[in-house]
Length: 88
Image (cartoon, rainbow, N blue to C red; front, side):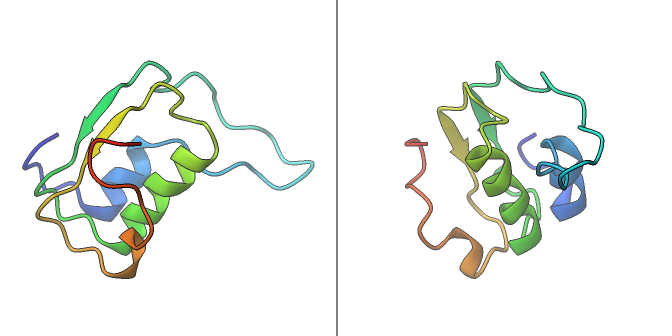
């Protein structure tokens, strides 16, 4: 996905959504479960997209993810505290 201008909305559509509230229907599972490397350099991602990616990683929705590259994007505080590139 390197250098595709997908932005926050595109990234949010790519990664699984956060878990639904109690009693709501569950979203589809098994999406991107084998993804190991995600190159999102220069894709116009900002805080919202970084938050969506962080939520997907925290929820275990990308269990095989080992590496995410986010260079040359527009995040501000969203990346604070995230592991350095290459060490998910």
